[in-house]
Structure formats: C-alpha cells, structure tokens
Length: 114
Image (tube, rainbow, N blue to C red; front, side, top):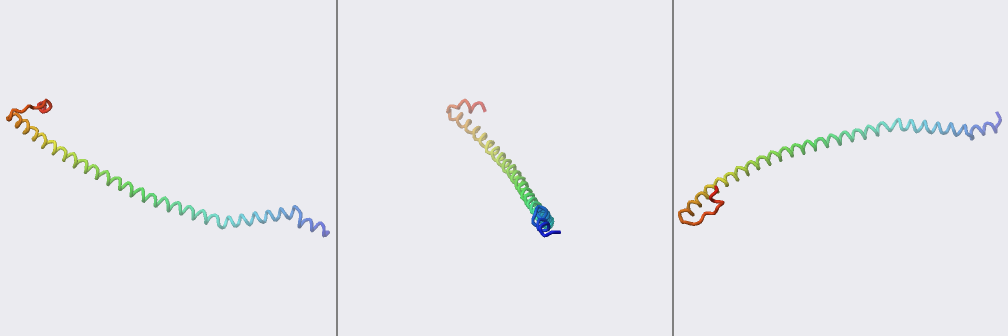
C-alpha cells in the first residue's frame, strides 16, 4: 500500500466512522455500567418516599377518626346539657305562670300556649 492510501484511510471518512463507533461503544458501556445503579437508587428513593407518605396518611386517618369520635362525644354532651336546661326552663316557666296568675298579672299569649 502506498503511503497516501494509508494516510487517507487513517484520516478519511473510514477512520471517522471507526472513531464514532468506538465512542458510541464506550458511551454504551459507560451507560450500561452506571445507569442501572442510578435508576435503582432513584426507584429506592421513590419507594421510601411512598412508605413515609403512607405512614403520614395513616396518622392523619387516625387523627381524623379520633377527632370525629371526640366531636360526637362533645355533641352528645351538649345535647344532654341543652335538654337539661330546657327542662329546667320549662319548670321555671310553669312556676312563673303560676306566680303571675296568683298576683293577677297578665300572661302573654306565647306563655299560655305552652
């Protein structure tokens, strides 16, 4: 082979193709070596994040249940207290009507209905 033909093979389109293929293979090997590790780490972080969020959701559900139970308990206590006050006011209203009747004071129309 002549020197000019050999030089053209080394510096021409053929060498550029060989160089490009070599670089692509090197990039492929590099990606094949490190990319799965990076992806695995990323997936593991996502799994850990999901687990921590599940714990948070469970705590929030528990808190919601507790607050609902407390609200129901307080509501029932208020209903009983209001019922007790209502009963006492009815007795006082009856006593007031009786006192007004004995004193000869006028009784309002809304007092007579009850």
